[in-house]
Length: 347
Ligand code: SAH
Image (cartoon, rainbow, N blue to C red; front, side):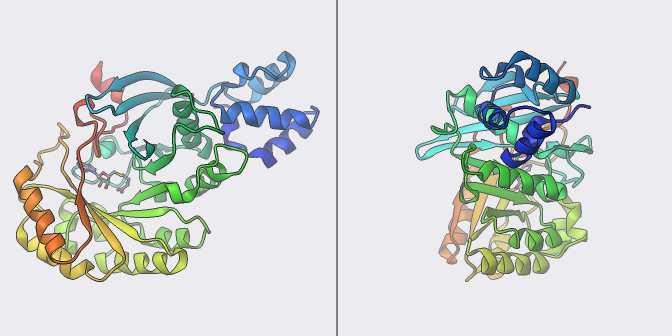
């Protein structure tokens, strides 16, 4: 596999251009083109011989959008083909305050959560920082955005993969995406979701990157949580909560818990009461969502009424909580519906 040029930030491109014997200003031209979502061969300012030299070492195109699905609610789902032929998915959601893009961080996932399609084929490979960044650059360009006038304003690391299981590349991606002069999306507009890899949560708190930390909790006791989330055997809920407290101390950011309501698993009144006891007084928010269907799994969503009741119990108990809409569910673009090897299954 050739290198991915989107893995290089402006400093690294400057060194590269020098190493290749080109004029220093070419680095800026290259960087500007990349940030506009162009493939190497589409950057108008670059002379042809330089483009050819670059394409011997780098993939002309880190990834391309090969299919777009539009939901009735305006959500769009994309299939991206990576340069090695792997397929990943991404989702674009439009809100009143701006547009949010959901990016993947791995091809597949090895966390094994029972309700999630991303994990069905296990982990295929990590994405490079440039492959994660390219998802944002391509979709921003697709919607007519530029780095100066962005169409993607918020990014969530909630596509396929466990971001903290690809720690180094994810942190580089966050830094490169925040760089001034680039697409310049601040960590404050980014949410990183983890199933609770405790040591990496501590590491993240030290990076000086104040992203919004989201933790997939989905149950109230370690035993029950382990029924659907194998990672619960490794890290206790109490350890996760301590790591969240540390994150808040270090970054000043409130944290969020994801709680997908599954019938007969985690959505009884008892669960709501125990959740209040666990989280009351913490600077956190609870995002409830009714489980989305994943056809390979035998788990069902809690009823709409049950979900409303659960929400009321939480808010009456003093927690900050909301019940999210299942955006993009009709196109398989909602939480837990993104999967590796899409084409293999669908064709
Ligand atoms: N690996 C990370 C990122 C995935 S984010 C994590 O575990 O947080 C996707 C979110 O959707 C997570 O909160 C995940 O637990 C949740 N999810 C997965 N499958 C789901 C499903 N079928 N219905 C609703 N939410 C689901």
